[in-house]
Image (cartoon, rainbow, N blue to C red):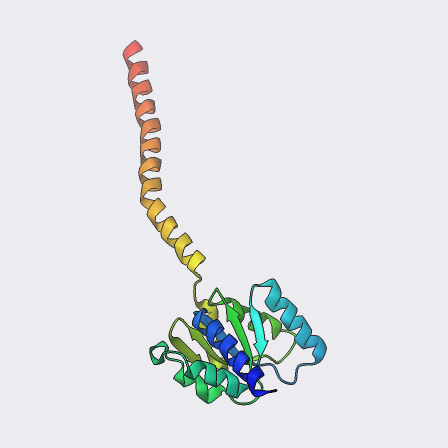
Length: 176
């Protein structure tokens, strides 16, 4: 790889890291070519972009970005084979890794960067799976906001039938 190619790769990674709030670092070594292709296909189907780059280039790209983003803890895991999984939904790569490992032992989660929070180690996978996506949170909030209105409407409707029943009973008694 020439110096110009390395510089171009670093620039592309800098742009990708700065425009993505969620990415995972994983070790997919020891997977067969067939397994890697299957994993890449699953990534594509679920909207996850998988890149395999040299660790030094990834680290240089991260170092060139503002320090307040908090990328520094990731530098320790940038050793050995590393695949970077970029995503728009925080928990999708974690679920993808877990699903894929039903048939294989890898990929292993090295680290995840979730909106300035850093998760180090494969033992964090379950915590990452439990993260709620923006859509899930919005759905829960809408459900909570609709709940009181539904209760009021339900009470009014049931009260209406009770009131009608009471009036009917009184009317029937009055006729006798």
